[in-house]
Length: 195
Image (tube, rainbow, N blue to C red):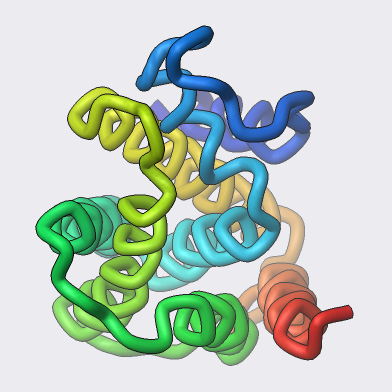
């Protein structure tokens, strides 16, 4: 099971999609939804950071924290489809990249429920953004597509965390994974200032 997770994480981490937003009429709503998280640097960084932090927490968090993200993202998507307003969507998404990177950088140790709530808060905003960019796509298949892509990005973060954990072996936490968290937070700050 570990080999499968590592392989999926390594493949997802090294793949670069070669497309922009796909036209749902031409490519189908699932493909449009699946491609969507990969074309926004903020989404990629945040979702990989969720998996990285979950791997650092270990135990039940490895599945529970990413699952909470996907579930809350779906709730945010539904709220957007119901035209429920949500202020500051883009600023909170950028803040999520910084915050999630910092959580990994300091290897923040919190109970699984707290970690799930923390990522869930940010996920709601990510989902709302996906809903506002639905366009001509069918809502259900688009949602299934971006949920699958999100899970794949989480798996990439988990795989990176596991690989770096084997390489690092620092008693105070994984130094390499922490550095990746710091780089994520810096990337979020870079995006926030519009560079």
